[in-house]
Length: 467
Ligand code: ADQ
Image (cartoon, rainbow, N blue to C red; front, side, top):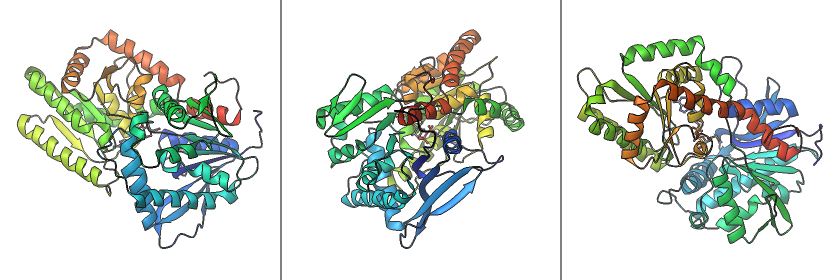
């Protein structure tokens, strides 16, 4: 397809981040979208995060630093059924292989459909003839289909930030076939890994009867859709700078002083059952039990800001971790040493970068993760002369790219314990070799690469981009 320089880009996602100026640190994803929106003069549309008594579809426009955002408020019932309900109680657990936690309720499904229709009604008038639409994530699977029903013939893409589950697992979702069929309204669908892409292809070919041509295009009825693997990265350059900033250096010093010569093992995750925090604590406990001579030479700093606190499974995992960290500390602590420092707050990015840099081991062990950006941030923050070791779950999407990490099965406490021993004993030349290979990967495929790779497929521009 010919790239039309007049095309604007309309990004649609559940939540929207307006630029925050120089002082406000932001995630790589927000930075990438804002850069894309400046380039293509676009609009970023989504939920404001705020409730309203009655949905009116009134849009709040904001323009800052060349980026226009457009947000709407949702009714409390919408938030409950669409966001806390179908998105986070049904799809999130199921897509992370936690069918035991997935809740199937018609009210959630109806609310999800209603909100997607409301988003479609609201955003439709903003979309002009030559605009290209890019929808993000599991909150908005049917949005493209709803836009098509409203006469939108524009190029439309969809990116899924979480895993795509195996076919048999997905078929346990009531009306799975209808939901997946709505995805075929898009022209391009992106996943982080080949594994998620293949699971998607399996479902649409075997359960929906779609066919696939040699270039990977999926055909069903009158629809043809290109599905691609397009791994997200971080803003690597920005993160390297953050890790050597004054504020990061101060944090690094503070960590080193408080470590008192001990090796720091760090974990940084949203408090979510998919991140494998319970299993991580148990793996670390196994290490303490099996290697008493190394006990006081290390400590684990786990940073886990609470998220989705209105959902019961999140309240339960929080209580479990409170109890487990307390039990492990009670069992093994001494008057001058505590095995786990468990911190439930968020930190600015440069502070996180300083903590990563001070850590001898980055412990990133999700049970299932679409990608996992913490693994990449940890690598970017290391001192090239004396880097730490990344221990990474084989079940994180990031493991498909980051083969030079120490890869582990997060369900096995023994493997986790062995990996900690291996990382602590790893000679410097091996640490440097592994780190260099990992760093090359995240420098080559950063978040800007991801954004360009996807928009290239969607808009047909920038042919020079290496894939
Ligand atoms: P998340 O599940 O949120 O993202 P992840 O990719 O690890 O997971 O990103 C988390 C981000 O939050 C990182 O940038 C991290 O630095 C930040 N963060 C975590 N704890 C923090 C703290 N205490 N203080 C400050 N910042 C903190 C979803 C998918 C992932 C996928 C991303 C992007 O679940 O698999 O990688 O989207 O597609």
